[in-house]
Image (cartoon, rainbow, N blue to C red; front, top):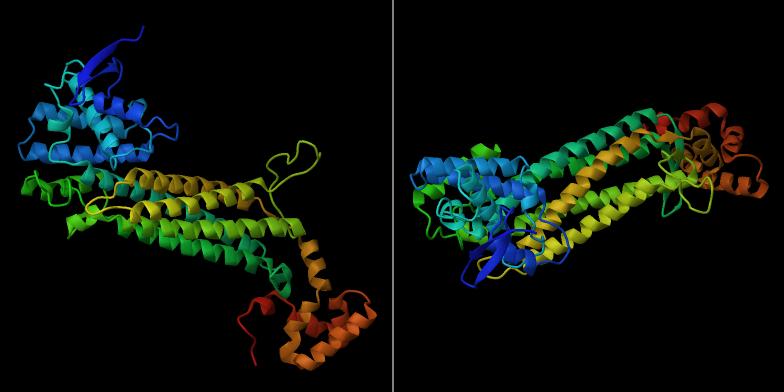
Length: 458
């Protein structure tokens, strides 16, 4: 039979599993928010442990915690950061209280692990108390949003690197396909010619903008409200602690964090998360567009996407562009998360954003999805092959080739040539132009260099 220990709070007493490091506040939250949605993102748990460690170090240095107790708390925080206590955070990500349940979960796990380190029994809070010691000079309202920013900055750096690798994969294809001429398309109709390399260069350029935006938006998250306690005024926290705790957090994380000039404003408003989410939405939008273009080019036969798996349970030999389809769905999920982040931020009231749990889950989930997707797409793009014969076939037959000759022959003569070809319909349009305008003129005008040069030289 399972064994339990009993803990009490102002509401009453609750049985806690004896092997659990969490306590009564976590146990109540575990039952109150048992929605089956998802657990709190591990990156947020780790970031909260970093914040708790910084608070402990500041309190110890200022004499508010004795050395043995402080060292035990720090050790417990380090174990959480390393992922050694991952099974001790059972609270659903969707929770009321602006993140209080997650904060209390951390407080209780850290306290009980510290008690154990000091030789005591879990639940003996006379040794280390979750609130009096672990949560000393803190509020959920300053440690929780600070932890979201710390977790998000680390993920943004990883995402920026992943986007850079995807950009590089497209740039390699740009060089590989530089000499392959093809027909461009606008509004799903044939347009003027270009090269397959130029088409992939456009993909690379869009991704490069995403990389730069993602790299730069870290700045939006560096300003934190740690030390502001409940509403940003620092009530119940010593002044020297408020200044010191940011320094400790900078040392622990290695991030360029700073205390907000107006901490009540930082506490009440979560708009920086909306800005960062908007940048991820822009990246998702580019990925959706690019992956849909790759599907179309594959359908036209101009490129061959890597075959990843059988595409049908009834049609033998069918292979679908499954990764592109998954990428489009992930992009849509990131866009949906952006809506949730925007809504959660806008519905904050007065001095606090009550809906940070939903916001943090959506934000970090989007980052995780995009990090993983960029890594998968990078390898996928490397395997794309060009079908030069198919590109040439579409190219040679297209009437839009005539556009390239307008500077030489003018609109009226170009129109006359098109009409002549349509009346007779003999051979490819490219061969027809060679007979009328000369092979040298046609080959030079339709060369990859001329087609991708910026304008023409008079």
